[in-house]
Length: 133
Image (cartoon, rainbow, N blue to C red):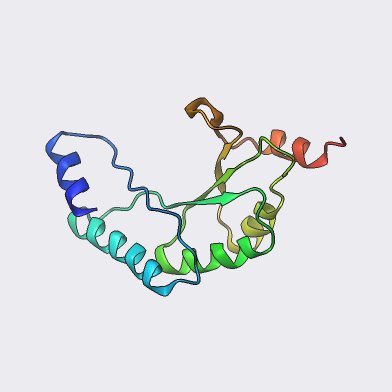
């Protein structure tokens, strides 16, 4: 994270995205690494991180609430990216996450291409949950 921040700064980049490998909230050493990334970046840029997005798979059930709680406590999640909405999963678990933790859904993934990552539209999401197929 430190090297990435320095490189972004040297190049005059407007954005730096630090994407970590998938982490299990039950693995304390990986969660500590995540906290360290936040500390390192905020030491270099005191207002950072500006966004901390948690990617939630639409097929994940109730475990996603526990996962969101643990990640939020560790690094202060500012938004959810709900993925895998291109299949039969409807992703209703994010309703519980938003209600319980107040973390908004910011993006949804409906496929595998970059164009399939879209800003969250609550009306479309509700229609998807209520669809009858």
